[in-house]
Length: 242
Image (tube, rainbow, N blue to C red; front, side, top):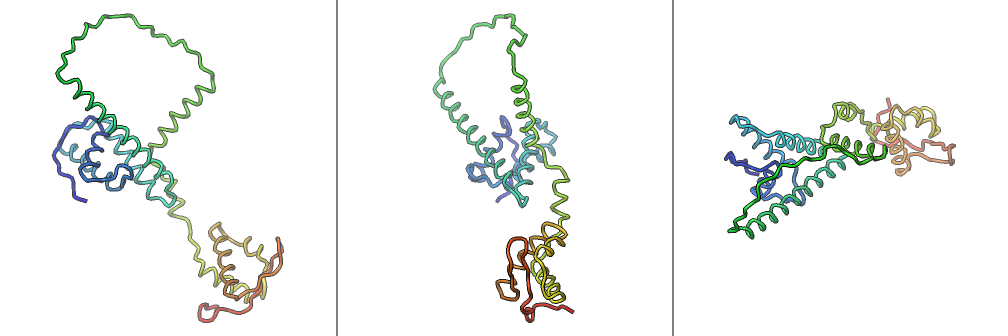
């Protein structure tokens, strides 16, 4: 993707700038490549700041929103990022349609001279007289809070479990299971699961037992909670049990 040409233009708002970048770089508005769009948008904002131009708060808010969408899209569980990307795509499509309608109306009214009546001062009633149920106010508050939280970047604690989580190798677990069975001859499956240190370790143990059963190195008998695993033969050339 070619880099942006730093010719500073005037845009009505962040949506106007995004439509300009999408059209300029021929991006698909129905399936936005969010990583490329973030790079182009932040490059434009950075250039405006380097030229000491005033950047409106809504442009900076959109930049934070794009970076947040990009961040959650890179996570292993990316459903939230996909949802946010579709929301942005829908907003851009609606904005583009509104611009087309406004342009058509403007062309239809070209040449008409409108004379407006001078504004007359009037006293407006400032008191709010509608009565709301308490649950209605609570629901309105929760909707506003939910929209605000969706635009905030995730806390650092959300990444800590991903980075520090220990990944248990199934191949290493196969060696561990065979070593355990070689020493004891047979073993209760429940006892194997109970000694697991984590959920990842538990899943690896289950997959290791399935793999050994498939290759006919172990025999499984019993049912329910009374399942016993017995070693038939040690896989040749695969394990070092010394």
